[in-house]
Length: 186
Image 1 (cartoon, rainbow, N blue to C red):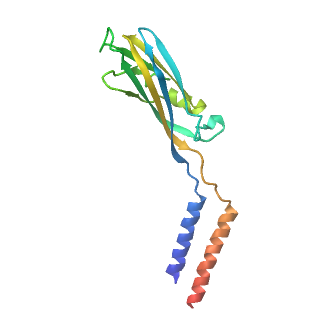
Image 2 (image 1 turned 60 degrees about the vertical axis):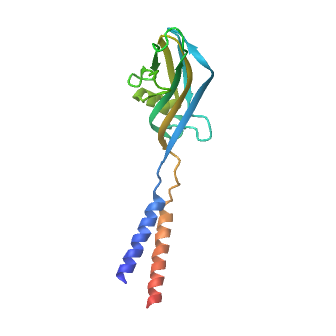
């Protein structure tokens, strides 16, 4: 009988712990920018565009924006293509993102190139939900087709946490059920 009582109390405590826990849900926010028609850049020209993840149904609402969403990492998938002109195969594009770590040269041998995150970019995304990207032609000319921002983090929306009185009532009811079951056995 003691085993059943202890098992019932253990189950009640586990259920109470599950009801009383509020966890943030993993979330991914994306923003796609497609330039139609593609924007052509020649030597020395730059194009700056802004990714905004605050719009949409599941828009980002960061802590400093009055919400409770947090971004922990992000990446930029950029698509450029060669125009097949005079310097075909010699194009050099510089991609500038917030901070220094994620900046870099675009690899024209691939159809797209991914750029990682930086602390400055995380700050920008978590404070305003926006990120500026600048593409500059260092050599040759090419087209900027699209950019996709993928930001991962936690959606702060969580289950409501019951009051302590609610948990006490739940535990008392469970103990009463165990006691009633014990009385019926006798």
